[in-house]
Amino acid sequence: MKKIFLIFSFLLSLSLFSQQQEDAWFFLKDKPDTASYISNPILMLSQRAINRRNNLQITINATDVPIHKSYLDAIKNSTGVTVLGKSKWLNAIHIQATKTIIDATFTNFSFIERVEFANKSFNSSSQKSIKKMVSNHQNKFNNSQTEFNYGSTSDQIKMLKGDYLHAQDLTGKGQVIAVIDAGFPNVNTLEAFKRLRDNNQILGGYDFVERSNSFYTGNNHGTNVLSTIGGYLENEFVGAAPDASFYLFRTENAAVEVPLEETLWVEAAERADSLGVDVINTSLGYSTFDNANYNYSYADMNGKTTFISRGAEIAANKGILVVNSAGNSGNDAWKYITAPADASSVITVGAVDKDSNIASFSSFGPSFDGRVKPEILAQGVSASVINHTTGAISSSNGTSFSSPIMAGLIACLNGNEGFLLKSFKRGKTEKAKNFNDFLKEAVYKSADRYTNPTEQHGFGIPNFKVALNSYIGSTASLEEEYFATLKVSPNPIVTNFRIEGLEGEVKEYKVKVFDVLGKEVFKQKGTIFNNFDISSLEKGVYFIRISKNNQYKTIKIIKN
Image (cartoon, rainbow, N blue to C red; front, side, top):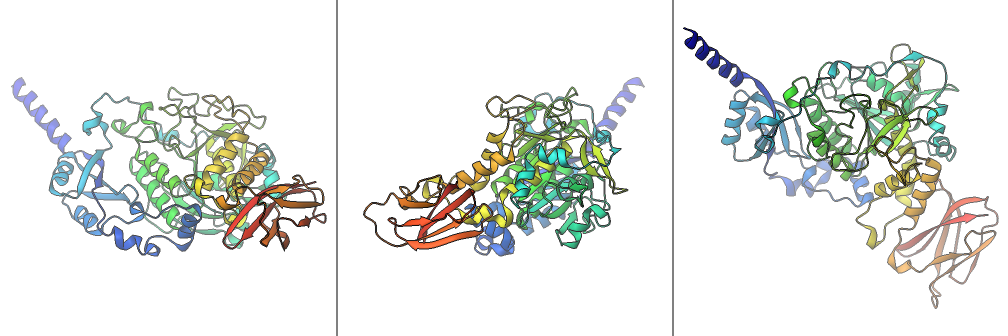
C-alpha cells in the first residue's frame, strides 16, 4: 500500500508540474513585411521620431518594423497559450502556458526561432545552478522614507550645477521625456503639476499594466519621480527640467514582481521611441521575482542577458538617452545594480546626500563583465519630492530620485528645441559617433572621480557647467573635411577676428555668430582676408559658423 501511495504521489506531482503556468518568450525568425514598412516609415514612427533618427544619422531598420500579424495571431489562437506582451525590437512574444504546451507550440510553428523560459532551468543553455534570492517585491518602494519638510530643490540642483544650465535658459524646453514607472496618481490634480498641465507639457501616456489609456493610476512612486523633473511651486520647488514635455507610462505593478514587467517596460520604450522621445527615465530594477525560479544572478547583470536590458540597449541605439536608477541594495546581501541598469548604453545613477557623501544604500557596480556602473551620482538622500496625496514638499531616499534629477538635467544639456543637434553636423570621419555619445562623454568626464572611479561612486558627481562647455566644444568641432584647416584668429577675441587656413582662397563666405542658446547675434559676408568686428558683443562663449554652399564649419570662440 505504501508503494502504491508513493507512486500515486509521484504521478500527482508530475500532473501538477505539467499544469504549472510558465512565462516564456517566443523569438521569431523574421518579419516578412520589412521592406514595405521601411519604404514608408511614417507607418511605424512619428515624424518627430524620424527627424530624431535623421539628425543622429541612425538608420531605420527591421527592428522598427512591427511583429508580423499572422505570426502573432497564430500564437494568440493556440489552445492553452495566453499572449501577455510583445516586442518588435526583439521580435519576441511574451506568452504564458504550461511547459508542455509551450514546447508543443514551438514545435508546431516554423516561424518561431527559439524559446526563452523565465525559469532558467528550462533553457538548454542555462542548466547550471541558478542562484536563488529571497523575493523583495513587497518592499521594493518602501525605502522612500518620507517626512514632511518645506525646503526646496536647491541642494539637488546646485550640487550638479544645474542652476548654471537654467541660467543659460537651458530648462528642457523642446525636450520630450518619457517616465516609465509604477503609476502617476494625482498628477492630474496636484498644484505642483499645474504648470505642466496648463502649458500642455504632459503629452499623453498609457497604463501598460491594465492596458488602459487612464494613466493617472497605480503606485505613487511615479508621481514622486515625476515631481523631481517637472514639478513646480513658485519660490518653493523647481524640478530639474521644468520646461520639458512628458509621456507617462506605467509598466510596473507594485503589488507583484513578475517577468511580464520586463516586457511591458520594453513595450513602453518602443512606444516612447515611436513618439520621438529624447530621454527616458526609469527608476525601476529587476533581479528577483515572486517565483524564485525566475531570479537573476549577478552573472546575469552583463547588459546582455535580461529581456529588459536588451530592450534598453536598443532604445539607446535608437537615439534615446536612457537614464536608470542604480538600485537601493548597497546594504543588502545582493548589493549590485539590477537590470536594466547593467546595459552598457544606459546612464546609471547612484545616490549621495546633500554633502556629496555616498548613500550606503546606493547599489554597487561594476557590471558583471567589468564595466563602470553606476556611471554618475546625484542626490538621493532626503531628495525633495512632491507628496502624492497632500501635494506638500517632502523628502525621500532612494536612487529612484537621483535618477530623475539626473535625467532632467541631461534633457536640459541636450539643448532647448534641440539647438545643439540642429546647429552642428559631423564630418565624414565622425559618423560612427552620435551626439548622445558626446553628451554622455561630456557628463562623465565632468564628474569628480572620473580618473579614479569606484564600485559604488562610479565616475562620481558631474558638473553640468563643465559638461555644457565640453559638450558644445566637442560638437562644434565636428567639421566637414573641406574646411578642416580653417581657424579663427585670434581666439580668444577682444574686438576683431580673421578667418585663416585656406591660403589662396578669395571666395566669399557667410559668417554667422551664435550665442550658447543658438540665437544669431552677428552675420556678415566676406573672404578669409577680412577682419570681422564683434566688439559690440558681451564677453562669453560663442560659435562662429563659416559656410559656403552646403558646406560649413562651426568653431567655438571666447569673447574677452
